[in-house]
Length: 290
Image (cartoon, rainbow, N blue to C red; front, side):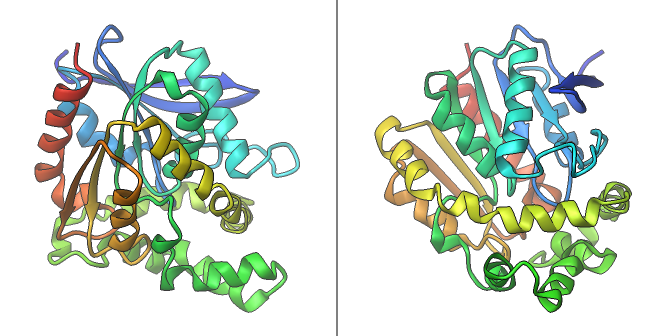
C-alpha cells in the first residue's frame, strides 16, 4: 500500500526496541532519531511523505515511546548506553549506508554514530539539536546546576517540571505563533511513557548525563571540519531549548551546509512540516538519491 508505515519490534542487546519503518528497503535509507521527551511518533508525517522515494526507520529509545523500559539496575541510561542500542539496531537491520535525521537527544546519539561510522553516513539532517556551547543558553542553567550537584532537590523538582503535563505542552507550543496548529495528542502520547514507574528517574539521569555530550563537542566539531558531511539544517528559530545561536554555530565548521530557519519552536515539524518536508526531500534527492 502506498506510503504504508509498519510498526515493528526487535530485541537489541536484550531490550525490545520498537521502530517504525516505511518505504522499500532497496531505496536509500534515512534513520530518524527522536528527541526528549517524545518518540518516533514525531516523524509520523515525514515518514509517510518520504515513503515513495526513501526507506525510513525511526526507533524509540529504551524508556521512550513503545520500546521496553528495563530497570535502571539492568540498563545503562546514558547517551553512550542509548547509542549502543541504536548501533545494535543498525547492525540487526543491516544498514550499510544511510542518512541521519537528528533532533534534540537524537543529535548527540547521531554525532556518536556519524563520527564512528564516517564512511557509512551519506548525509545528515539536523532539526533543533546541538553540538556547540553556543546552543546551551538560559534553558540549560538549572541542568548545569544539576551537573554540579545531583543531590540538589530544588533543582531536581524544577527539572521534573519539564516533563509534567504543563511542561510538555510548553515544549510543543512555546515559540509557535499559532498553537492551534499543534496537535495535543503529542504530549498526551508522551505522558504514556513518562508515567511509567522509574521513568522520572530515567529522565533525570539523562539530564545529568547530558554533560557527557558537551565534553565531546570538540571531537564532533573536528569531525565536521575533517569529513565535511553533507548537512541540512531545518530549525525552529524561536526554540528556547536549543536556540538559533546553536544552529548558527555549525556554519563555523560545516562546509557542505544548507541552512533554513522557520518561525517555529522546538518541535518545528509540528507547525511547519508542510514547509520543511519538501526541503528535506529536495535535499535528499540532490545529495543521496540513486
